[in-house]
Image (cartoon, rainbow, N blue to C red):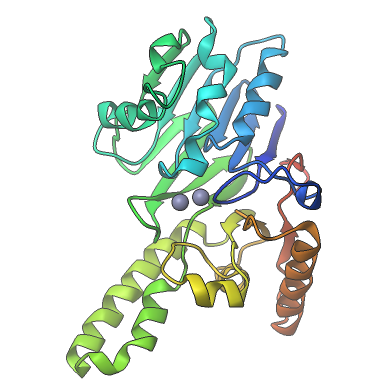
Length: 305
Ligand SMILES: [Zn+2]
Ligand SMILES: [Zn+2]
């Protein structure tokens, strides 16, 4: 079988943190590489994509690249102006992300490189670059089959599911799971019984579509940004409390969960506590879920999982 692996190039949420206290887990923002044979899929272009681009330049062959964007918040696109393959000929790069068409996606990605925000604009890119038009709920990159789904996060945001080398991987870095349910709980007295039932129906529909994307996957990479205390202060900001994420993974029969999009305030020692608490929840529920803290540089050989 051809080589197939997943590598974390950036695991941090919101902004990069190059602090000594954070470097075991990693300071770069969202970027995951999934490689299958001669094709490379890149999930998001946070600062993690810069190191990936530099590595690609040193490889013997220029393999076709596809970059998937979950959305266009800064922490998911800010590595793109420094992604070296875009500035070299001979690279074939396809971009895909939320939006009505490819032109709109190009506009969203190129805006951050316009003067006066950047010395170099996308006109300097000389790779063969294409912005993919949305054509239905799935797309393919070589042997990798990709489906996507809206998830709850400010602005239009996708979660992705990939089928690759006989394994399933879901990538959902920014997702406030249970936002609607929590809002309904806390504001229940403001609505009539009929309104409550209607809103609960909408909430169930949203939750069903989101959980369908990740149900039973071999690997779930999911937003686990907040502790319960942080979540109490930042409910509605679009990120999940790690406890909700662990319960979500158990409820949807995920095989292995990688806690992801770590808060900039969470140092390595804090992440150890979050991990230990997650394992306690899993044990208390009698689940076989495997749970890890996603760390920069961590590589999963897909034939081993
Ligand atoms: Zn983010
Ligand atoms: Zn975001």
